[in-house]
Amino acid sequence: MILGVWFSLMNQSLLPEFSMGQKNKLSGFGVRVAAFAIDFAVVYFALMFVRMVVVRQGLYFPFELTFVILFVVYNIAAVLLFARTIGKAFCGLRVCRKSDDEKKVGVVGIVVREAVGKLLTLMTLGLGFAIPMMFTRSKRALHDYVGGVKVVRSERRSKRVLFGECIGVGLCAYAVYAAVIPPLNLFMDGGLLREAGRDYLPPYASRELGDVVDVQQMTDEEKGRLDEWFKGNVKEPEDYAVEMAKTHDLLLVGEAHDRYEELAYFNRILPRLYEEADVRVVGMECMRAADNGLLTQIVTADEFDEKLALYTARKTSCWKAWGYKGYWDVMKTVWEINQKRDEGERPMRLVGVFPDIDLSNMPLVLDNGDVDGDFERVPMYEKLRVGRFALDLPMIFQLEVGYAHNIEEETIKKNEKGVLLVGAAHASLRHKQRQKMGDGAIRMGYLLHALYGDRVGHILLHSSGASNQAIVEMFESYYEMNEGKPFAISLAGSSFGKLTDSTAEYYSFGLQSNACLDDIATGYVMLNSEDEVERCEWLEGFVSDEMYGEYKPYFEVVCKKKLDNADKVNAAFRARQMK
Image 1 (cartoon, rainbow, N blue to C red):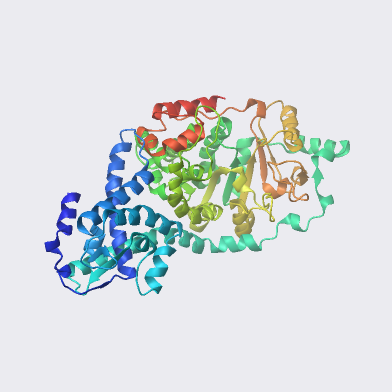
Image 2 (image 1 turned 135 degrees about the vertical axis):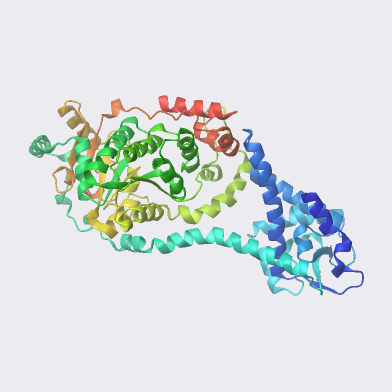
């Protein structure tokens, strides 16, 4: 069908505006862009169809590389045979020799123009096209000069040409809309959060160093007082979560990723948070906000659809390597809560907070690919993903604002209580994380607390993050004091809240020596010691054949080995979890 349209459009009899002796004029910038947009769309959507068929068979399809090759071949063949591409035909344009409107370009000239000249234009980030087209009388782009050609249009403008120009302009408008509007909307919607975070003065900015206690320099007397306080104030972790949810509109649970006990704890507390603390929204960092409609469908259905849940886990996962079962068990936990609720009670909602971006391109574009094992290097053609990665960059730079805005929209702004499971690095309330340069990174928790104050709380789950940290070892000793049982303590206003550790990388105290635990979280929960940590089970069949076909090089970078099919990817991830 595409070939039929192509040959029909290229037939000289259908282009009377280019009859012999007819006066022509040089084409302008706008119409050239419109024609390019049509050609781009023709090749892109044709290739997308082929890709859809191929990846469903579990075969990898290098889309960018194939697109570049096909686009160059398509342009060369079309101009050699008909002096125009489909886009140029729609817009009434024709490629000819720079000195003669009636003569077609030779093979060498057009090959050089398409294969070399357009590469040079691309290397100038499009300036080699825009500047000469807009500001010179010759109206020839850089690749036109390289190929010794010009692009002309007839003085006549038929209805078909006007229609083609409208199509091209519409495609350009859509492309700009898709690339610009989402990050612009987030920039506008997150303005209050961003402003609050910028203006907020964290407590340690005016705190005296003597007001905090470094765990590495505690005296025996200070340690004794801390022991007594612990014995009199230690709490059961599930009870403490309910207590915190009752007194905060939004409760952040800061975790170290893919730990079995932490995820089991989160699933256990959800029914009690619903029944005893009126929590009606469960937020998940690992799920995309764009798929909240699908998540609602699952957790409010009359029956739990296992196949739809697995499909959703694959689709909504922020990293396509996030197949840890405990996170996706939350879907069934929330569904069970809704099945048991009293008639007339509002259902519990499950929402994602991750922006609509694909982070799987990042390691392929930025990483050199030198890894251990039998996988040595990311193929250079995968760097062509830089286009997709560049489109996501405006959202990546606003990632923390995106997290904060998405959970804010679903909870506080709807006057509903919520709990959010998120990486601890994102959840620090009053503390900018350490950076090598600058005054620290502003994270999601910091933005939310700056705007909403103590309406936002944070339970920090115990994790070492790095070895030989005195503050981690201290909590390990209290775990032993508690006879190896899980415990929770309050940090806000307590003796533990004033503790700091000048060498602790995980808690990022290196930049601000007078910062303390109270700046990071409201409470602290220790479920097990670091020696007892178990990795979360890998969700059976999480990586499908279609996912393998689309993300093969990404999976190989993550797993550091060559992988021939989806089964081997799942096996590799299971093996990593067992280590």
